[in-house]
Length: 190
Length: 132
View 1 (spheres, rainbow over the protein chains, first blue to last red):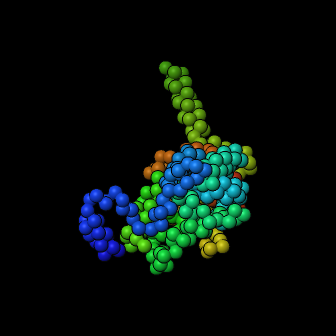
View 2: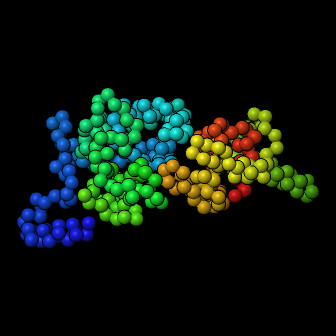
C-alpha cells in the first residue's frame, strides 16, 4: 500500500499542478461517485442517522446504520420482527416501533437515493428483501477483496457489521475508501 | 419544645420516606410487590446476576455483556458496542428511568434466561444493582 501512495504522490507531482483537480482522490469504482436519479444529481454520502429515538433505541446496541443503507421494504420487514432481531430480542413498545418504522422507511435508500445506496443495491433484485446490509450485492463486491485474515481473530472486528471500526467517518454517512482504517491492519487501497 | 422536636422528627421521617418512595427503583419494587413478590434480597440478585444459563451459542449470563466488574464498561457480545457501567455509583444515569428499566429487563431477561424475569427476580436484581 505504501508503494501505491509513493507512486501516486510521484505521479501527482510529475503530472503538474494543473492536472490535480482532474485526478480522482482514490482509485476504485469512482466513476460511480455520483448518479443521475430522476433527473436530479444524487449526493454520494448518506444522510446521518440522527433521529433521537432511533439513536436511543437502536444505537444502544449497535452502530446507527443510516436508513439509506437498506430499501424501505427491508426496514419494514425488520421492524416487524424485533423479537428475533438477528437472534436477539430487541422488542419495542408498539408506538415506538411504529415511529421508528416510519422514520426508517421514509429515509430508506430507495426513497432518498444516494450514490452509496446505488452502489450497494443498484443490482439488488427488486423482489428480494435483504435484512443484512452486508448481503447487498454492492456490499459484497466492495468487500470481497478483504482477506479473511483481516477479520479472523481480530479483537476489534467480529464481522462486517461494525462499519465504524474501519470506516472512520461512517457515523457521518461517509464511506469513502480513503477514510478506511482497519484496526490492526491500517489503510486499505485496492 | 418536645412537641416541636417530635413534629420535626415526624416531618423529617415522612419527608425521607416520601422522597425514597419516589425513586424509580422504589416505584418498580412497589409494583413487583403488588404483583406478588415478597422480600427482596440483594444477595439473591447478585447470585442471579452472575448465574449462567444455556443459550444457543453457549452459556449466557448478565456478565456476558456487562462484564464481571459493574463499575467498568461492558461490551455487547455480538456487536462489540461498549455498554456503559451498570453501577449507579459510577454511572449516574443508571436506574433512573422506569421505562428504560422495564425495556431492558424484558429484552435482556429473554436473551439471558430465555424467558421474562419474574417480579421477584427483577426486584432482587434491582436491590443488588442499586448498591453497586
